[in-house]
Image 1: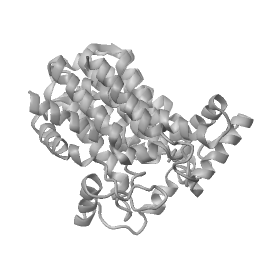
Image 2 (image 1 turned 90 degrees about the vertical axis):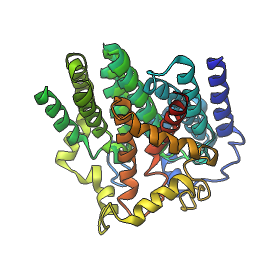
Image 3 (image 1 turned 90 degrees about the horizontal axis):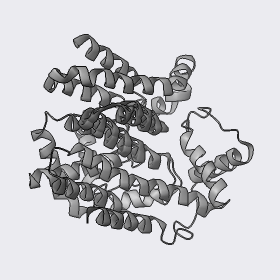
Image 4 (image 1 turned 180 degrees about the vertical axis):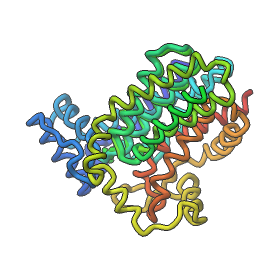
Length: 415
């Protein structure tokens, strides 16, 4: 029954993103048109830019579009259909990541929580709208969910492959959106510390990869299989090559490592070398960005530095009020995104989200709670670092987070 219901939710998500795609939205914004032109150029010549434009440096989304137009034809509908697929995959990844994060529950309770995670993302107007557009950031959540699922599965099974793939997923997040990059250096420090202690926005891909990262990481932690950790690293790398906003995500490995160090120190021989594998895979996949950053940092963080210039403290009260509003009362008022009346959360899920936050705090010893909490904070940083709050694209990593928090709410009520 669970599989049947999950397929129904995924089909509903696909229909909501595909219906009348040839007429809605009715036209392209300037940013969408640039993505289309770049993708046509890549598809025809096989030559694609890598971090040549400081305003739109991440390459992964345009590559996806180029592949899509080669498969589905040269039309605006074909480009939008690629994003529909990415958005639908994120819904499926949300269910997987939630199941891995809550594997301590019984099968039926875990499945209900997974269905809730998929359901809230399937019907979220903000996610549906970006899944029908041509912007870059939403793919980050897919890689984040893959990374989470693989890492949790790796910690559960102990398979090396899961850890390595989790690193691959994490690099995907970083190639999706720039905001995931900022903590790449933190990852190296954290691994050293653990060892010594012992529209078609790019954002669509970001949320998809974040969800995959989450599911894979949680499955890795549960099963202890190397493969899950490796796959979670791959998913996270996908988010980072999708949108600059994903650049802070490697710090989530720090949170998981510290949680394991505090509460599962007796199992260090299992998780420590496997976590290192995830970090090594991520570092290898991110080597291009690392080298480019040392030579010409403007090409990587130029846009982020420009937006941050002259801004006040992260901890101003109005920033937190605006972030709260983005989740519960209003969306991004930029007209090209067309989501001003659509906050992140569909109102019917508000209570479950709040309960999920409580559950996140009460199960603080679980590595999945450390991971989800870290992803929530890290995904909020790009949006809160500027005066443009709410900003749906810079906060697109939250599409990988709030479904998991809702799932935690269901799990907490059922336990």
